[in-house]
Image (spheres, rainbow, N blue to C red):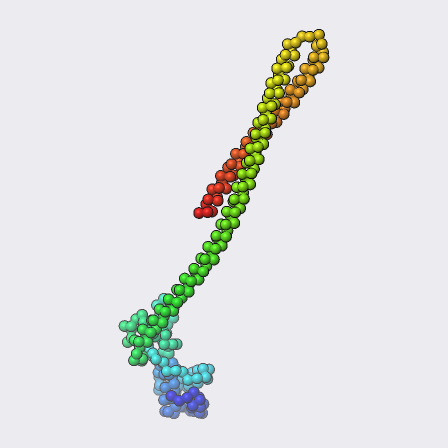
Length: 274
């Protein structure tokens, strides 16, 4: 087959015979070009319109591609097709590339009889195709594994930083709770001491009132006023004692709450550390 320029010149020269009918040499050229481009014969070669249709297809194809097609290494027999498993694609002549045929033969070497033409070394080509695809798969797997490893390292570093921050915060909270507990213990101790003093004072006042009640001296009015004062003092002391007891109970509740919070915080810190 001639060069692209020579072929296009021949096709242009044939335009003058498009309506009147192509010559025998014209038809031979169209037959060769049709086999080269489309991998098949022109149907119904006794029909002038069939050659006209073939001429239009060939001329437009070459004008668009701006080059002569390369002779295919693999040509299917008439009516044969290739259907890659798992796809909706079907291939007939001309095959888009040698890879289509070599992929098919790598999986179904017993189907070699589907081809009307194939290279003498087709088995070596198919083996090379399989090796190339295996290498591509291996390289892809290594790249994906490397990417997964990098992602895992990034995630682990991030999780480690978050865990460190959580542990620091937990330690600070534990220290704060420990200080609150110490302050609360001091306050409770002080209230217990104050309660003991108030209890003694109330007991002394009760004793004094009892002694005054039994006394029947001449200065009853004066003593009565003193008794009233003592009663007021006793009532005040009792009120202070009750207030101290209430505060002591509240502090006990607060102390239990702090202990519970401290326990939960320690448990959470232990889980984070795991």
